[in-house]
Image (tube, rainbow, N blue to C red; front, side, top):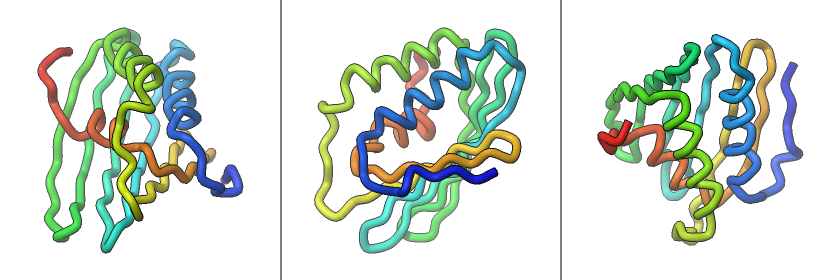
Length: 135
C-alpha cells in the first residue's frame, strides 16, 4: 500500500518522527529509506536500516551528482540512533536551506511506502551517510 502526503513541501520533522516511531516499536524489523536531493542533477541515497533489539545497522548506497557510487555501513546502539534523530528534531532550523534544493524522502516498510517532500533534509542525509565515530 503506497501512501503519500500529497507531496506538498513541508519540514523534515515528519519523516524524522516517522523513523523514530519505527525504531521505538521495539520490533526486530528492516525498512528502507531513500532520499533524492535535486538541484542541477540528483544526489541519491538508498539506506537499508536493520533493527535488532538494541542495535541499528545502516547500509547506505550513494549515487552522487557526478554519478559516482559509494557504499557505507554504519552501526549504532538503538538508543544512540534515537538520540541522533531527537537531536535533528531539536535543531532542524539550524541547517542551511539551499536555494533550488528539494529532497524527496521515501520510507518503505513491508508493502507500505510513505513519501515526503522537503527542502531541509541535509541533516538526515548526513546521518545516513557519515560515520561520526560516536556510536
